[in-house]
Every structure is written in C-alpha cells, then in structure tokens.
Length: 349
Image (tube, rainbow, N blue to C red; front, top):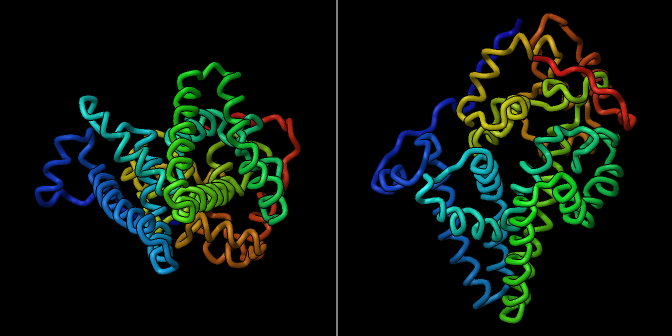
C-alpha cells in the first residue's frame, strides 16, 4: 500500500478580527467561516462592478467584471455546493440565505434555487446512473462530440424542462416550487434590467449563466468520466478524486468527489482524513485518484485524448505496480460508453 502525503486543507483557518467574531454568532459550524468571507467579499465587489457596468458600459469595465467573475466563480460555486448540503446559517438567521447566497449567485450565473434542485433533488439520489439527467454513463467520455452535442447541448436546451419533469414525477413538489420561483425571479430581474442597459444585462446575467453551466457540466463530466462498467453504482469507481491541488485549497477540497458521494454531508475539511483512513477500500476497488489536477484539467485532457498526461498524474495506491502504458489502458477502458440497462453490481460497503 502506497502512503499519500496530503497538502490539501484538513483544518479551517482560525477566526481573526471583528468580522469573523460577528459571523461566528450567525453560522452553525465555525469551520465554515471561509464561506462568509466569500459571500461578503463577492457581494460587495460584484455589486460595485455591476452598478459600474450599468452606469458606463464599455470594454474595460466589461473585462474587469469578467476577470473578477472568472476568478471567483470556483470559490462561490463550491461555497454554494457546501451550504446546499449542510445548512450554513443558524435557524434564526436563515433569512440571510437569500441575499448572501441566492441573489449573489445570480452574478455568478446561478438561478436562485436551481443548483439545489439539480444537485440535491436529482443528481445525488440517482448517483450518475440511468435516471440521472446529468449521467455520463451512456456517452463516450473522451469524445468532444459527445460532450458538446449530446451532453452540454441537451442540458442547455432541455435541462430545465427535464428537471421539472423529473421532480414532478417523483413528487418532490417543494423543491420544484422553489426552482420555479427562482426561475421567475431570474427572468423578472433580467427583463426589467434589460430596459435599463441591455448590454450590461446580457453580460452580467445571461453570459455568466451560459459560462457557468458549461463549466459545471464539464466538471461533472470529469468527476464521472472513469466508470467501471461492472459496478457503475459503486462510488469508488463511478467517481474520481483529485488531491494536492491549488483548486482544493481555493475551492474547499472539492476534488474529493468519491468521499463526497459516499457521504454528501461530510464536512469539506474531513475529506483528506477520510481518504487516508479508507485507502485500503479505495485500493481494493481500484479507484482513480489524480494528483495536482482539477476537474477542468481532467476534462481538457479527455477532450484531447491525452491519456499520457492523465497517467503522469495518476496516483498508485495499491501493489499492482502498473506500467505507464497499463495505467493509460485502465483509464481508456473506464471512459468507454456503457450500454443502457446494464445491471449495476452491488456497491462496495
């Protein structure tokens, strides 16, 4: 068994200053204090940049907004991911979710309540299997054609319609109502602001929506790109883990997707320890782990079919002693299209 040295955060930074002391009174878990910093920083900066765009729309202001959006999209979205799984504010301060999470999310291309509806209302219950609307199973996962035309294209055109039907058919009416409310709020704000400055509205709300959804679907594609066809419901081999990356340090250990699917409510600081403690189970299942990669780079390498680059970042965790060519063959095998209806093997416990 090969030991792993971790550089990813295993503890949240300690509170410091009046801002932190104030927010500690509002939130449920002090380890989530970095989320408050992401929320307040971006609410202030994005509000200023957006007002500036509406007052004076020009290429330089547009580039400044776009640069900040691109820089903060990861931290905001992964903050949103975590607070969707684990309530952030104490019950009495739950009303703060709306301005600090939902409204702020519109600057980052998220319709209010839409992420929660898709991710918790559909994706996690279905676990990338046949009924998952974002399942990668039945596509060739190193094919740019399959990604852009069959996966992303379908999601951008019919994703909302399909998700509404899914939630309705499964009687998840509360989630469906909140999703529809978020859609109405988004369209209402966008239509009204288009009369103020259509160019700014197109950039701030429409362009970010398309870019964010593309980024999220490429991330989900990479997270579920390497699947063992014999057991596609086994989280060890239908997801991947990316360790020791700048991405994990900026985005709250999001690379630990196997750990997250096994226990969606696991705290982000606990993922490295979970991997260290359960490494034999990962090894027995032949799980895929990469070092110094994020999901976007995994997606890029797949689109380029650069299995050699992926193999360079592959982390051996067992005694199989695979050669580089054998690692490439394993990765290539795991990206093959899986025929619909393949019986799923029992998940490893």
